Length: 342
Image (cartoon, rainbow, N blue to C red):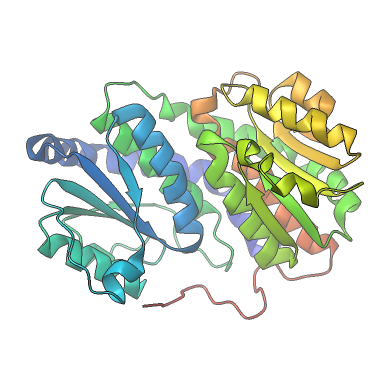
């Protein structure tokens, strides 16, 4: 078994441990943030961490009503701009906590008056030393270059943050169990990947809370399987990109039952007209019926809780497809675990 597959299987335990270990600290952070009357949240990250932040933006804006910005690190690192952040919460997201540009943004934000928070897997990292407070992912060492358990751990922390910043009750305690149930689809994924062994390009589609997951699965397919994977919202896909679709062109959809359902159904109907190949991760029977292939998740998973459990079959798909292609998912060519950019 690859390290990537082993680490995918660790996720329910990692999520459970993180909830128990970090809940007390969150109460303290929540008190500080309420006193500061935060009216802007800025997220700064790269790679898979940036995809987790993409999800965090949707979740935090939907639940708190506070505008959330995804930072462009070059504004700070290359253009040396100083922003007014005295009522802002700036959150750095990094598996290692050693991304030089991410940490430089946090340092600059502190000087500009922001309250800074780090989300990382490494308690003794540079990020943890810079940030005013740190939320830890209790994942242990992640050995595969492709991030899996730290990605979902980062996403979990956005649920925890939303729970202290919003009036909405998020039942994130259910997520570890839903994630465990998702692992039961492994044998089905093993069968499905045989269909895609010779896939060289595809489109990954997600919308709303699962839009970040479309970026993450596309990244996983590129880095572990060397598949050229574009990613789109199902809404944006009609505005031009649909033109690239031709007969049997693979489209992968992350499509839970919820408010995004109709746009996903509309897209699937159009793909059917074009004879395109569609593969959906869903818990909606109509979406599954309209898809060429599908993986059915439990129907009781609410859209708000779907992003973490729904990415698990996608991670399995990438890892098992790499294996079927005869590639080493743990050591993608030209890549390293920690990437330093300025």
